Image (cartoon, rainbow, N blue to C red; front, side):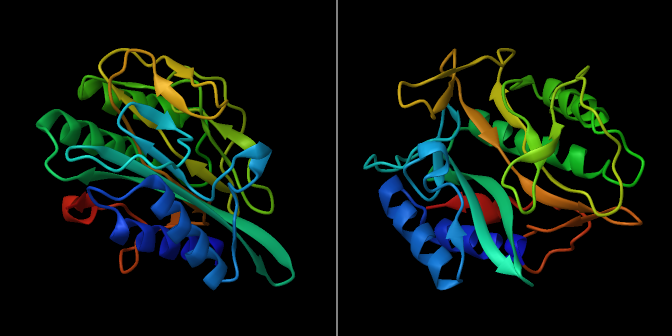
Length: 257
């Protein structure tokens, strides 16, 4: 339920995303859409995060705080939504994000965004009982390198459920030391942050949240919440009307005027 409602909220926010819209406007839309579904927006007041959604443009890797800056033509914008909802007497989080192409984006930005999506798909394709969590990073790094991009090492996917962030840690880079083997019933996110070029390093703004590329180049990201099933994977935050067991690229979904 949390995954489905999180998807509904993100899709609503995405419909309003366009050149000229501000991050604060998207934040108000996400907050209202969450409350309309009897959800709480998980980011709000999480370790003093001041808004209900993360809005991360261009060189912002993650955790961008929405503000009055309008979206410009050619921007790439990541919207990261998490909702917290009661289900059968317990409360659960559903976490997902997508990067959108706003206006007329250059070829390099389109390549980066497609690479980030391919990296998430590479991780998704490995999910099944018996897979070691540490093996995801190698597959993701291989895809990124083939596109002349790099994988941010400072942030990772995570277990999710009644807690927003919990075990296991899911690094996205090769030769990591993640602990654990996938078992039916495990729920977790994969959310590789992919930078243009060979530099993966990040730095943080003084707000203690906004992470940006150290070299100023663009970064893109996609995220789903996944469930390990007896036979493979269920994508709990899948786009509506799409199969729950596989990811299919659709550039029209992420294009915004």
